[in-house]
Amino acid sequence: MALPAELSMEAVGGLMMRPGFARAVRTLYRGKIDTVAEDPVMASLFRDAGHYVVTLLAFLLAHDEEGITLARLKAVCAGSRLMSPGRVRALLGYLEHVGFVDQVTARTGNQAAVYRPAPRFVDAWCRHMRSGLEAAAIIDEGAQAVLARMDEPGLAVSFARVQGGIISAAIFGQDWGDDMPFVRIFQHRLGGGRAMTGLIAAEDDDGDLAGQAVPFSLTQVAEMSGISRVQARRLFEDAQGAGLVVIEDGRLRWAPQTQGLIAFNAGFELAALLAAAQKTVKAVAA
Image (cartoon, rainbow, N blue to C red; front, side, top):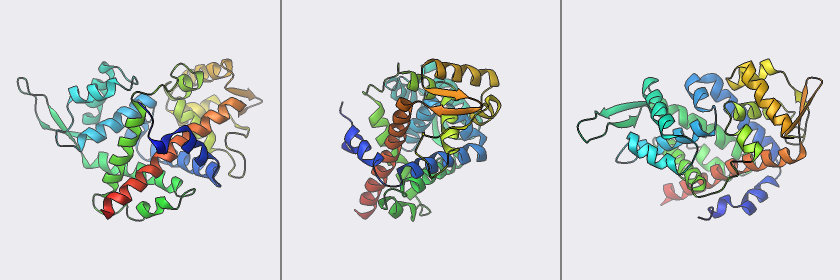
């Protein structure tokens, strides 16, 4: 299955060349840090790529006519290879426990329990989307058209659903190099993505993206990543062993090949946000 044109290698590469791209990425990542700081539930859902994508898919299912059932969520997650069926069950139970989804139909006989999004889930996810749009608007004024209308009833949800659909379509059927050290350590490892986000966000805005040496301590990384100090040590020992980072004298520097992977990863996310903004504007105007 081919990637959507707006998420192709060429499209993302072009986006990475635009003025302000590095600032947009840091703004995107700082918005994620704020989201984690403001909401402990969202912080738990940002722990790794698996938790994030399954939550995104739950948001999509929750807004269609059938709603969420465990079987439907397992089915849509199966193609992503990001989370096992057992962990999907646990995540759905967690979302109900923290008040992100409500059970509207109990399980009876052959009928599965059906869940719908609670206002807290909708509000938190839409705030997350608004933060992403603010970053995307730095490199493309087209995002401003949606950003200015995010307070309109239903528009934020519509945008979030379009963006989620774009991301999910891109995930399924694609080879994203799950065996690559960068993907395995900084996307799939617990706390890896949040550690990378925090370190990039700490860079000076005038410097090259992922091209600066930043202060590094295991205690600080563990706190901002939501993992233990032991887990943080193992994560960055593995990152050093794979040649992804260099840590010397209390400072971390990303290896040249890692810089490119970080830029493409962020460029892909910004491209999805901009594509969703364009589609949302067209849908509202129709």
